[in-house]
Length: 142
Image 1 (cartoon, rainbow, N blue to C red):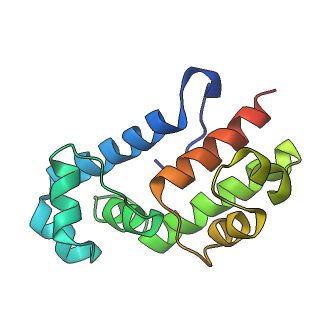
Image 2 (tube, rainbow, N blue to C red):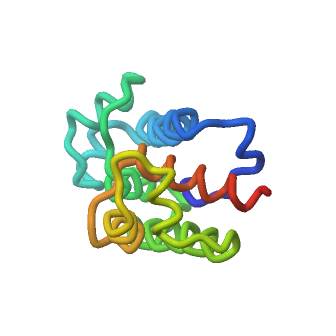
């Protein structure tokens, strides 16, 4: 799931993580059905259909959590989001990272944007999440 540890950050890339997250969403859609996922998650049907077709649309973390929450035996979307954000914060603590240090490595995101995204005050795409998660995990892997 989104908040699982990255076992070996050196053997993967943020792009591969993003594809894996989209694949996880596609699995839920295939198991439950696109109409049901769209209805229960309030994610646009076009986005659901694109994910199911193996395309790589831009998906926000909130939408991904909403799709995952439709699956049986899965926590609600808000719990998934909280766990995901907590996982990032705990990784930062363990690696002794602050948002300024992370911003140096994140093209297109400054420290304030990173902080807002991690805290849930600004939307975060799966691509941005994968980049942040991979960077934090790679720093913890040292």
